[in-house]
Amino acid sequence: MITCAKQGRISGGPMDSIPPVFVKAVPPNYTTNFDGEEIRIYFDEYIKLKDYQRQLIVSPPLENTLISPQGSASKYISIEIKDTLQPNTTYVFNFGQSVVDNNEENPYSYFKYIMSTGDYIDSLTVRGEIKDALLRAPDNFVTVMLYEADSTYNDSIVYKDRPRYVTNTLDSLTTFEISNLKEGSYKLVAMKDEDANFTYQSKKDKIGFLEGFIDVPKDTSYVLTLFKEEATLKTSRPRHAAKQRLSFGFQGNADSLRVNVLSSVPADFESLITERKNDTLNYWYKPNVETDSLWLEIRGENYVDTTIAKLRDLKPDSLFFTPESRGTLTLKNPFKVTSSVPVTSINDSLISVTGDSIPVPFTTDINLRKSSFDIRFDTKEVTTYEITVLPDAITPYLGARNDTLRYKVRTKEFSDYGDIELTLVNAKRYPYIIQLIDGKGEVSKQVIANEGNVFKFETLSPGNYFIRLIEDANKNGIYDPGSYLEQRQAERVIYYPKEIEVNAGWLPRETFQLKD
Image 1 (cartoon, rainbow, N blue to C red):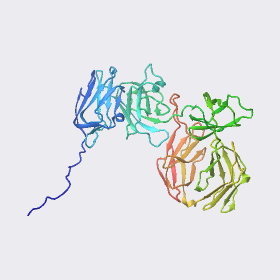
Image 2: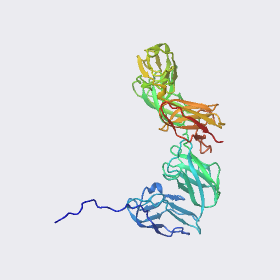
Image 3: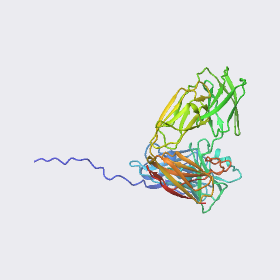
């Protein structure tokens, strides 16, 4: 009798979960009076360096260092030093989570190689925490830097020079530790260094700092709050986008911006500026000018630029309207319409609003800067509203007036929405900007609180929300970030610690205890 062996899948045994083991280093770890050009770090198995460009932290920073292996496996790490090392300085190579075994990529977490060019290893430490001025949690991979407060120091050093010491929070921490420091006085700065070049670029990077200097050693845990500076006002060269409309990009706050025409134009020449996008301005003018270019002077707060706009033979913008609400109008919200051309006036007598065929009183409100207008009326539950806009009701800045417009929207029941009631306790720093943040991180609703302590957010779509409170120190109704050169911190932002769940028909009542 012949029997066959039992068929089955060959087992590979248990998965390897043991990280590599450090064997030795040449020269040894914690070497003093280092004057070599290469370091080799040996392990008990083949290893790889995973994402080492982001994970490896060298403090003080070095510019010309060759690290291997790259893209292959080896039993040792080679560090070839091409820089001139500073005398009497302790260097730390922190590999973060980059050292992994070749097969299962088990990490040897935060392996450090430390050596000194002097007679001893510096041993002092600075610790702290990273926060974000506006967001609930800070970014990953935040760089924390120390600059020596010596005779050459000035605040602009962060724009051009590398720091004396550096560390990074990597991808999982909000705390930091800079180790193996010399005794001394330092400027402590944190940065979301987008280009990983240890220099501050205000257009890209977030920054956080402590005013003044810190002394090392000192038994203190520091908190650094990151913010993105408001860009300095600057405009790009205007582009002729349509007949009687120029378009140009900008950065910074353009609220104060104005444009003066330096070219010869008719006596009745006029213009206006609109901002449909956060980075683009439209400059409208009339009457049309028969010329191939316009010289313009663009002025704003601490900003002047003279530029030329080349004109072409273009068609004018066509007039069309886009309602914000389609199908459903949220209770207590206005009916908002955006126009392709700025609206300068509205004749309410040529507009009608009905609710279930019954006339409803209304008012209109124009936002010239945003090229939009609101039709406001009291909304009732489960009602169909029809808005009719007859010809010539809307006067655009340029071109023909509107044809007949008809819109139909319907409201839901109040029970389809939820509300939140918020009580502030120990509120002393009015005014506050109280913002309701939705699941996408966007501001859903906002209240400016000049007094009082009970506030209600109504007609909320079911979902999860956070509450953000901004101490509006300069009373301008918006959040203001800080300024590094002015050594000014961002306005204080406090998050209510709980995520609030809102369901249809719910009214969560929350108490926000503020601290001094």
